[in-house]
Length: 297
Image 1 (cartoon, rainbow, N blue to C red):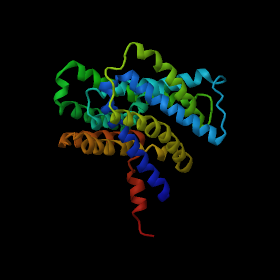
Image 2: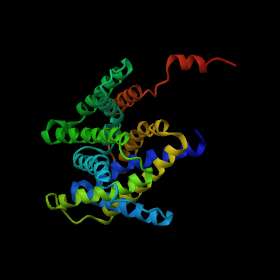
Image 3: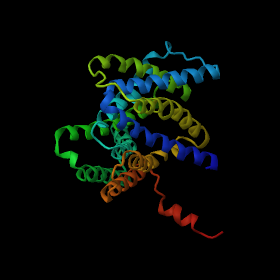
Image 4: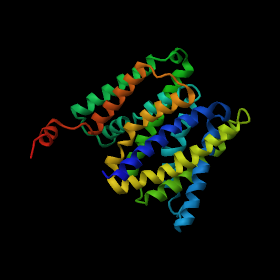
């Protein structure tokens, strides 16, 4: 991996880690539906401007069904679930729960393709579950049912990402930028009617709206572009390592901006989730590989 790709990887992790901070700041005042409509709306407009600059025409009507499926599974539904959870759960905990996506991906893959899981996958799944249990058990908010539902919502959001990734394997083969652009418009159409049932609760402050703008433009639109650039440079497997870095930045931003406390159980839970995810995805180096690379030429 080149230095430029490594810097992009860390920058992307920092951006996506900050997305949970912005959701946490705005969820209670805007409500989940209004917050996410702003997020996907700002992202769609930003990508539209980029498309105009690049002179890329989006064939939305030709792939309407595909854009609505990916827009629902990869944006609208998981964003709404995370926004709902952000009303109760800290930004750092949200970022850690988000890192369970590859674990859910393995579970979906086992069910989808009916393949037998390996021992490392099973161990990774168990470690991931232990990590989530530690995170749940270390916070006082789990004592009420609303917070338990919020945790379930955050995990369900990660499950949506996993289902979306498997859907795209058999979906129409479009350019990554077009997938992002079309899915954001579809997501904005999906979320829009929900505003009637989950309206804005109070007039947001200037800081909240600036955070929402950053959430849509930087953490969604520009982050997608950066992620697709990484995929082109280093491949999808290596680009997935951003998942392991997001919790570190999520914890950091939550502590720095929102003064969220970082306890030993938070770090322990994060460690279990990240190691479990690495086992499931095969990112932990094998003993054979270690032995081979440790030899002196």
